[in-house]
Length: 218
Image (cartoon, rainbow, N blue to C red; front, top):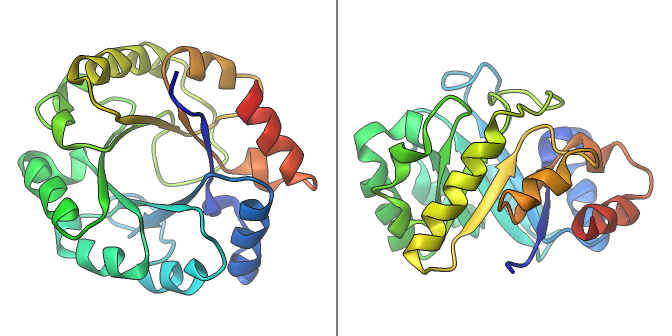
């Protein structure tokens, strides 16, 4: 059984006090800080770049997971590695046939790498790169904005992704991102996910230690 890791997404944090927010969820037991990087082109929203990650890095010793929702991510991976990201994930949809080379380039910088697919992208599209991955991220909403409703049809894809990972015999994390809450977390865990991204579910709570513990143990 893989370790369950709770990864609050700072997309739902108060941007005016990001350092404090990251420290808070880290102190409350978060395993991973999920950093949604959006460029306004690949997705219809703009968030932040490597400088913010570098600035908040000193507030947390948790794993920093930089999820790049940007076009041509290979041009920027060095900056994100330098910023303090522990793992950089890139979209199949953004990389196309350059995905494997991009993943290898990330690893050459001394950080872990992951592939990401949107809800309408088949798991088979990343079968040829799974051996390169430290993590596979399945989106359970279409990326761009927080607070969206979980897409139920992603559950069979999670099971398929879990089987794909199992065939490698490697320790590859399976991450799920989008609309995760107390009502559906058991289903995504049962489908094979072990890294659980939760934005509003964590940041809207006053007692964040309690909700992180509940999400981990449910």
